[in-house]
Length: 296
Image 1 (cartoon, one colour):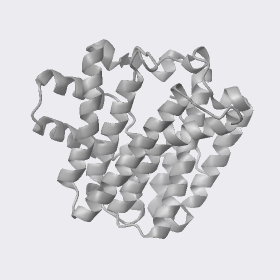
Image 2: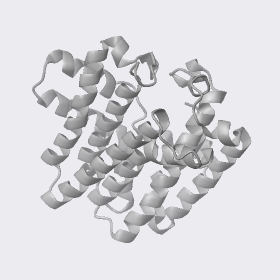
Image 3: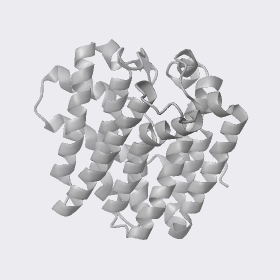
Image 4: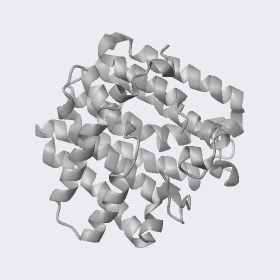
C-alpha cells in the first residue's frame, strides 16, 4: 500500500485549482443581492479540501474521461456540501462557532443569511448541471445522482440528530446507517457523477460505487477518531463535540483500536475495487490512502 510519504499531495489535489475559478465565475454570473453573494462566497470559496469535486474529476479520468467534462458536477457537489456545512453549523443543528479555522457563516453574518445562503447553494447546484451538462439525457442522469445523494445525506443527518430507530436496532447498525448516508452519500454521488461524465459502462460504475462506499465509511471512521485524538487547533473546528453531545461514533461503539482496524479494512476494500482500472486509477488509490491517514 502507498504510504503517506509516497503520496504527491500537489498532484492529488490539482483538480481543486480547476474547480475554484469555475465556481467563482458561475457565482459571479448570477444576478443576486450582493450580501447574499458575499455570504455564499465566504463559505463556498473559503479554504477547504475540495475532496468531493476532486473525486468527481478523478473518477472521470479513471474511466478515460477528460477533467473538463466533470467540472459542472464537481462544482455542483461542492455547492451541496457547502450548503450542508452551513446548515449543520447552525444553532438548531450542531451549534458550532468555527469551521475551517474561521467563524461559521451564521457567526460571520447572521442566522437568517446563513439559512438563505445554504438554500441558494442547493438550487445553484442543480442550475449549474442543467445549464452546463450536455446532452440532455446525461444531464438527467447527473441531476438524479445529485438529488439522490443530497436527499440521502439529509436522511443521514436525521438519523444522526433526530433519530427514530426501532429500539432493537444495535448501535453498530445505527452507526453504519448514519455514516453511509450522512457522509457516504455525497462521496458516492461525487464518484458516480464523475464516472457518468466519463461514459463509464455498468461494470466500471459498479466498481467505482464499491470504492466510493468504502472510502465514504472510512472517511467518517477517521473523522470520529480525529475528534477524540486531535485538538481544536489541529482540526480547525471544535474538537470533542461528539463526546460532548453523546453522539454515536466508531470509537464510542467499537473502541479506538477496532476503529483503526476498520479504517485499514475499508482502505483495502477500496483499493481492490480499483483493480480493473489499472494506472488510470492511481489518483483514486492515492486519495484513498490520503483520507485514511489525514490528520484533520
